Image 1 (tube, rainbow, N blue to C red):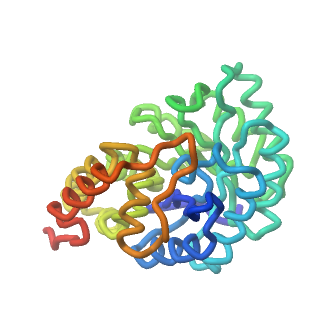
Image 2: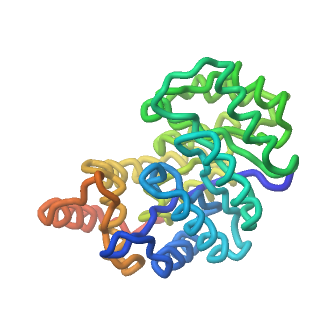
Image 3: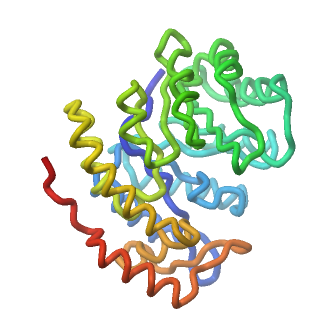
Length: 304
């Protein structure tokens, strides 16, 4: 196995032009922005990247630009789960050919599937790429309908050596502990819920996949630095501040809010989201910016 993900992994937004096309220049600036703010990995075309509202060609374009922008400095794992198995396989093979360090694959969405169908889906994807090309399962049952139990993950891991771990985006710390027992306790577990970053690391997990870190990545870097020192008291102090900022960012349409703040910072050119998602209104943008400024979001305080 080549690489596994650790620390703060940022599911980057997909910058769009006023003409509703992928803004490659903004995307490259965004990659630079999250790296400079301490990210340990990036995860393009995830939920925060508006994955299901992008075309297959657009997703390939985003993947290529992100890989080139990162230039090997941090791992790039492309989210390749799509509306159907054929597109998922095509995107997975493209990610490997384009030079990604690995992929994440969300469960099939909308239709409720049996455990056997989910296992077959992941086995097919895993066998469509190289045996040493890392894959993270991605479960977000509140959005996708389908969930992944520890028993199903264990069966997938047994059949697919290149399945390295899971990104679990439901706030169930007990289930995350169960995932950690898979494959003789070598299965990588990443939290999707930001407020569980410190807690998941404390029980043996590898980190978090955080949309909020598009905007406040330096705060996540502070948590990770404390975790690396096993100073969980300090990590939790930074976690509390991060939770407060996240509450502001996610109050109204988090993805649109991230883009508003990134545009304000000069990282991306527009705050446009892909319809039918909604942009923030002018008033909502003003309230968001004012609340973030009052919270002094740019400052990472020196805590002890």
